[in-house]
Image (cartoon, rainbow, N blue to C red):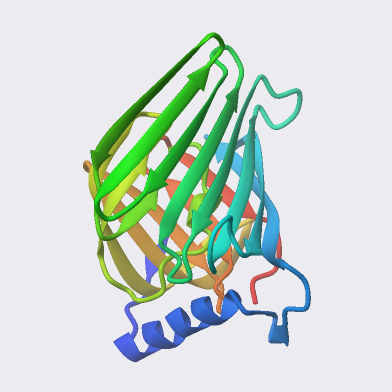
Length: 237
């Protein structure tokens, strides 16, 4: 698949990041009257074949204080799934992660709870018959990633700052992540080429490409490491 990237003036990127911010308060130009900000289904492809699906919802509010909550579940395979990955990601009003819950079903089921702060990161893992907890150094800015789940980036921090401390809870890994706001790029979704806003995430030599429409909605994601592509089969706005 060929992807052509079009560099645009930084002012255009700023206009789009403003749209991302407004997406948390409006949907399609209309004031949000319900709790849900956005939601949808991502078709997950591997080698051009459907290998999974992901359903997500972004809600206004979180357990404590203002912010948002992304709830997402990925099924592998897409039907008659043998493994499910469910995340509940709580974001502050600045769209930075504050807490995350993960539930994995399959051959090795477990639950994970993490609180992400500037001074420390606290992680608790619960498996049948045992439980473990640990602490890691904190960071000013976190991003939560998973190589098989994509909607965790459905609402990115909107200030355009490039550097993050990436937490990959299912892999028990941390790394420095770099975000690049590319600008407008043409990419294919469901056989149709669209002009969308592209963002790239780089960490440990791996790249994840993300595409958003003008309303700030995640439309497509591609993980260069796994080769997985997630597409939202809706018309961009």
